Image (cartoon, rainbow, N blue to C red; front, side, top):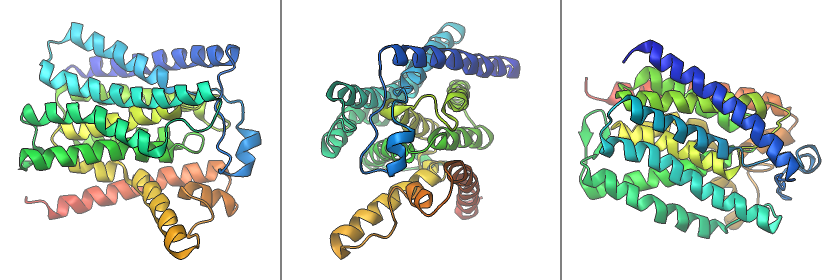
Length: 321
């Protein structure tokens, strides 16, 4: 594919997303649509972040669909390839949107129950997983294929896990968007993408980077569950659809660390009656021991890049040459 066309798509997606996000912020301010902060989070967030517009992920979906339509007009892509790459992240974003909308209607920091959201994620992900397996996508890593049922279970686990992991990571200004941007850059360098996969990844990168313009500390807008679910779905779909499902593990390195910190914290509280961290996810722990928010975010970005690189190198060492 013409590299200039790919560059043009990336630059265009960046500015379209940047403009739409500005318009979305203005709309949210007029309609008093702000995010209700969780009362069990850091106490200073209740005052510093209260009233910030949310659901910026709506712009992610609109921008993504707009460029997906452009791809359809410019190129004749196979429907079996196009549908999951576009449908999976948009379905994930829809789940997040429903949760955000419920929070807004209830004027609460809580939307669906944890169990209710999990069942919704599984229920709406299963048709896409079935579609992928029936279409013959059973490769999980560089030519390694597994039985269809095994692939389906793995894809479902990775997809639901990715949505939740990015959602958990989205707790500080710029943290989730920055980590996802780093992952998209890594994919562009590592994966032998098809034309469509390359374009989708470039648009995902442009959306993530443009969001940082408004979400950098102090944030003017939050992505909400809409955005975190969309980005989690996009990371998973790119890995799964390109035949590199297991590479989601390194490309979601810091998201995995955040998720494990929550699991360990809950396990310790229920079984030992003690906390391991001052607060989970672990980014809040570092806030409470004195790190500034910008320090936590920057250091987590660096940790994500290093951890991702080390895991990719390790996977490369154990794979057959």
